Amino acid sequence: MTALLALTTYSQEKKWTLQECVQYAIDNNINIQQTELDLETAAIDRSDAIGAFLPTLNGTASNSWQTGLTQNVLTGVLETQQTRNSSFGISSGVRLINGFRNHKVLDRAELSKIAADYNIAKLKDDVALNVAVSYLQVLLARESAKVIVTQNAVTKEQILRTQELVDGGVLPRGDLLEIRATDASERQRIVAAENAVSIGLVNLAQLLNIKDFANFDIAEGEYEVQGEGILDTQADVLIETAKETRYDLKIAEQNEAIAKKDLEISKTGFYPTLDAFFNYNTRESNRSSGFNTSIDPDNPFIDSGNPIGVVGNTGDIVTSLSPNITGVDEIGPLPFIEQLYLNDGISYGLSLRVPVFNGFSVKNQVKRSEVNVMRSEFQKELAEQNLRTAVYQAYTDAKAARESYEAAKIAVESQELAYAYAKDRYDVGLTNAFDFSQSKLRYDNAQIEIARSKYDYIFRIKVLELYFGVPVTELKF
Image 1 (cartoon, rainbow, N blue to C red):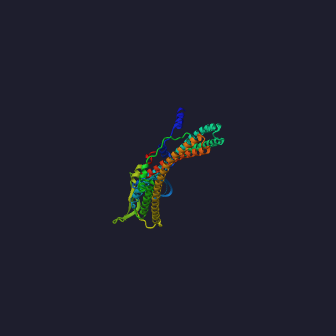
Image 2 (image 1 turned 90 degrees about the horizontal axis):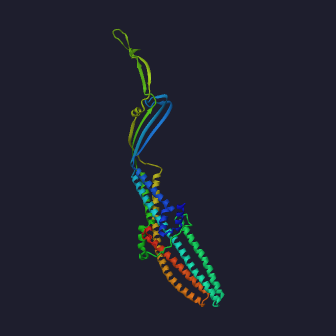
């Protein structure tokens, strides 16, 4: 319980900096985690490609029972029998020639891994920019709320001051009503500003995949404009640098390389394939291995009665002798291991396959690959055009943001002087409440605008720095 309370207290006191938010989003973003699975898939594809170079090795085993007229596996004779037979084997094969398909598939796997790395890096950049935008929006909303709260405190003081002037007959009662209306309007704006802060924090927490919205908050540090020197770089230099560093174009280039490699792989279907193979097989059976004949040892031979010739002098007929068989015994099956040893055999050789006609399948696959190559070339060209446009737009936006920020600084100084002048005149009854309220509103808006233009300028510079090759984790705010 104590640990849980401590964790809750820490969560409530934790103030997230922009760098912490960016890093946390990169580490926990679901889209990034999904894309990282593509990297694992690419590694598996590479393992498959390497495995294609290795020989295969498989073992087989079978055990069967047969009844009726079947071949005796030991004698080769057809017999009416009931028998059990077992067979075992090992086979191995390796592809020797296939138009270098295996090499090309391995090359493609390497390209896919690089493309997956680029996709992850691009997604991290996108997530970081989205987090930065959301973070700066919260800062702007909070800054706007502070301005309105501060000015509302001044308005409340003016209500008291106006009440005194009205009571003294210096100002009409309508001025008091005008100031009170201004107070009510500012309180509405405070509620809207605080709501904007809450919504901004919720949106930022969602980007970070943080579910405890209620206790999520960001640090209120001072964020100054840094890296303005990048605007002194020519737009063409930024564009050329972006071509070398941005992942958008690298991904398109990698996809083009993959498409060309797919074309090479599809063309290997026109080439013959040569395989080497080796097989080892053996068998055993429960059938008898033969018969054992018993002969009378005392009288091993008897007259068979079959004439084989005639004695010339006497004319006697000569008959053959035959073994005096006293019995025939069936010999049982040989021992299991001995049968495997006696009945084994091997086969080995080469197998050549030459493609002649396969229903245009290979030819059509080559055509599809050629179309994909052309498509990837167009996509690369489009990515380059989009990158050029995006960099130039970012460069123009950053310059405009700088001018807007400089103008806002001048405006807030002018409005501050105008407000101070209007306040002095109002305090002595030389101006009415409406004119004073309008001057105060313009000053409030000028303060809000300088905060908005400042954070917008900061963001625009960071976008340019990304295009200039600064890693997202090294951006300084």
